[in-house]
Structure formats: structure tokens, C-alpha cells
Image 1 (cartoon, rainbow, N blue to C red):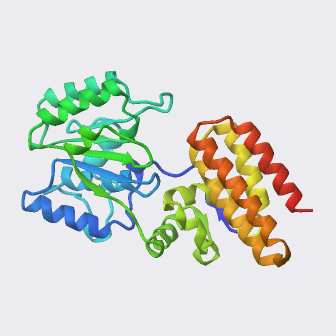
Image 2 (image 1 turned 60 degrees about the vertical axis):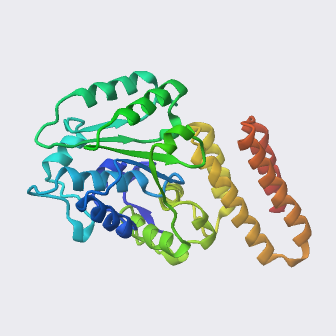
Image 3 (image 1 turned 90 degrees about the horizontal axis):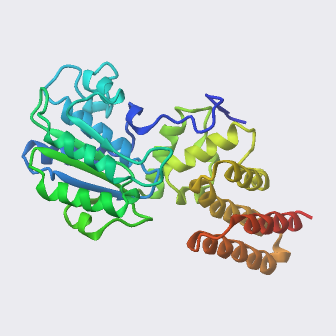
Length: 326
């Protein structure tokens, strides 16, 4: 059994504190080329599934911009931030005068108009030690209608020395008028690339991590989400490779405590893996297993789509899995 290097659940560093960047070499190099010839769009929309590293990439490229031509500048050869960098420290402490972060807080689901008004005040201030301003908007899909309209006005009136990095989870929606004002970069990785990224990420958190023991079906999700699941399960001594029943039951209990939508989404993948194992080990009940599998997956999809109460769904999943185990 591998071991987590920390005993805390979800103890993954937030994107702004991730000193290493994995998998974005080509994106980074392309952005640098555009910046150096003065062609980098100043309204960039990074879209993709949650957990694919969009925010980490943004923070790294923002560090490159803020430290361009300075000492302790961004380490391009290693795609790494120098932790002694002055701009990095100020950004982590929320005191960098040339940087503004707009996001929803942990206590609020949406980004409200009050936060957007603070952004407007920031844009009206004079820059310090640099002639550029940088705005990072994380979870742009959480903008409510009022903050969306205010942001639209900001985008329309911004100058070319203000750079916007807008991070968007494309499983949700944002105003089409905001998208139309931006240059969109769609982030998507192939399965082999996800595997490479996950291997590097997981080695930072899990002792003796072996990527070859990870079922390729897990890689339908993003590396960031997979790492999150692995830490939760491994830190509770649950073997995702050989004990998928315990994985499913534990994650449902964990969801009831945390109400984390990523945990709920992971159930679909685990149920796929669970029935794949049943198919492989018992050829006599293929028709029954197939029927039960699609019943549960459809129930999960309907629950997500129509925002139904999950209590009855979890009861059905537990009863079904219990019957399969007999």
C-alpha cells in the first residue's frame, strides 16, 4: 500500500503555491513567443475540465510576466517559480500591487458584484514598478448575472497593457458576450499526457506512487481530480485497485459530509471500474451486470442533471452493490 505524505485530506497545494508546472510546456512556449512579439492577447479565456491545471498554468505565466527582466525571475527551463521571488511572495500574500484576483470565496457559491467593483478600483490605480496590470478570474462560471455584466464592461474598456486570464470550467456556462470578447484556449490532454502529468503530480504527495497500478479508465478524469481522489482513498487505507466496493461506499459517505461535487462525479468512474471487474471475473452474469451498471449510471446522470436529492440514489447504489457481492 502506498502512503500519502500528509495526513490531511485534500492537502494539495492551491494553484498559486504550486512551484512546478507539468504538461504545459507547449502552451507556455507559445505564450512567450506571442508576448515577445507583442501579439499576446490581453483577454485570455482558458477553458477545460476542472482539475486540468488551468489555474496553475495561469499563475506560472503571470509570474513570468511580473518577473520579466528581474532577478529571481521565472525559471523557464524547469517551468518553475523561484520561491524567493519578490513578486511571488507578494502575490501569495495578496499584496502584489500589479495583480488582482477575482474568485468566489469558500463561503460563497457565486462571484458577486461587490468583488467586481473592487476590480474596477484596482484598474483605476497607478501600477507599481511595472507598466502592466494582470487580472486573474478563477471559476468564471461562478459569476452571477450582475458581476458578469460588470466584467463585460471592464473588458470592453480595458487597455492593451492590462492582461486578463479568465479560467472557465467548460462543464458550465458563462455569458456568450464575455467569451466573444476573449481569445479562447481550450485545454485538453490525451490519455498518455494525463498519465505523465499524474505521475509527476502524485510523486509530490504519495510515497512510492506507481502509475502502472492506476486503471486507465480513471484517466477519463483530470490529473488534479484523480490526485485528489487518490489522496482521500490512500490516506484511509482503501485500495482503489483491489477494493472498489469500499471506494464507492466511502466516497458516498464523504460526499454526505463535504457535499463536494467532484466526489460525486467520481462515483460514475468507480462504478464503471467496479462492473468492469465483475465482467472479467464472472462471465455468467454479463447481461445482469450490464443492466445494473447502466441503471446506476443513468440514475447518477439524472441526479446531476436535475439536481435531485442524492439520498435515494445512494441507498440504491448501496443495495445494488450489496446484492452483487453475494
